[in-house]
Image (cartoon, rainbow, N blue to C red; front, side):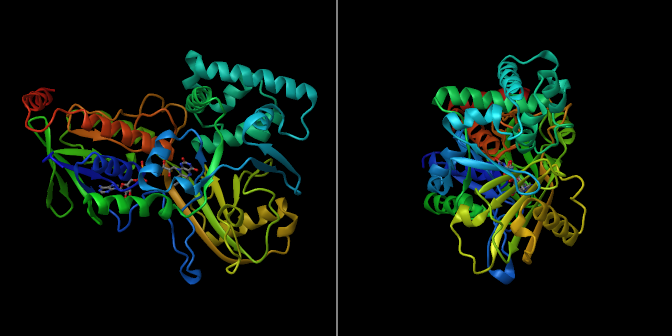
Length: 467
Ligand SMILES: Cc1cc2nc3c(=O)[nH]c(=O)nc-3n(C[C@H](O)[C@H](O)[C@H](O)COP(=O)(O)OP(=O)(O)OC[C@H]3O[C@@H](n4cnc5c(N)ncnc54)[C@H](O)[C@@H]3O)c2cc1C
């Protein structure tokens, strides 16, 4: 460690953890400031006290193309806790199911023919529309940012069967917004990233899941890296303002007035928490305004412990053609190989949960159980042994029409201040990969700065002060 500069990371979510881990690996002196009493941000485990069980704040799925997230998992030694199943299940009310391949040829087949009621004409139309969609992802029409995903699907001529069985819920999963609100450009950009990665890796991107809780996956390993490299973690340290003088960062002011000295800062807080922190940055108005316009979207997760199995056919099942109250059911027995002493645990996710977010927890549980009963014959007599509802009103920034081009980049006009977080500009939507990718970009910017004390470092600092 021959760099005397102090690197401060604000925010202990995935972006902040990744930035701190990678700076520490590069031999830098790092302090991590986290406003809460725990690390992990929006990806963390939650204890169900009476059961001493630790399900998560919300089921997280992982695309095989999450290159930066896998780099992070490798750094913290938990890469082995991600599994990619060969198939998922689509389920309709009454219990009818269709198996959908997630890798290789079966996955390609699923692109056009996953719906059991699709006619041959439907499948041909779906194939043609899917080709058109792929092409338009890579060569985007000028007006794509003005369209909702729903409008785009209709313009592409995507048949209803293909939309119901695949595209509508995939779009909801990718941007956590219903297709009638979601920006077609957000969806197209993510598909374009997926297509490029698929071509580069010579296999399509598939969807997997953690086989352990989120704390074990993301936090415990980071803590081991921090211990090894002497990273100082300060819990309940609420950053209020990043101090800047002469075009360079000098410290981070905390609630209470204390100043944490800093020579470089990675600001890795979500858009809804950025207000005030950047007041001394010349372009703060622009960033605050973008953060405001990006807003947020709610997700409600429910961890249901039932007295019997639901009779799932796969670890991940998408509920199709219903009210859209739950989009996915995750069978934790299949995913984690867990025992059933506390009952059978199912994690349910409702994305774009505008209608559910303010409901009392019991109402959410009743609604979800009613839905499960209509989809799973085995649930007819099932009893809820325990339920945990996790409403997240600000689950992710919103990706509706009108948000295109708002996400700020990681570099700022002050070279020693960089931004990170899922909402900063990356080639993914609001995802863990976006958080990890933003951290990689932010760290690269800091590591590219001239060495401390060099003439070039002094001239960069002066140039920064003139901006
Ligand atoms: C229920 C749910 C399900 C999801 N499902 C998926 C999924 O399946 N796949 C996927 O890829 N993504 C999913 N996501 C999105 C993913 O969780 C986020 O994109 C990612 O975790 C964001 O990480 P981040 O570090 O950018 O932000 P955060 O995790 O929010 O971290 C920011 C941290 O900054 C701290 N902080 C804020 N202000 C301050 C301050 N002033 N001082 C100090 N600390 C501060 C916060 O306390 C927090 O710990 C889901 C999100 C939710 C909520």
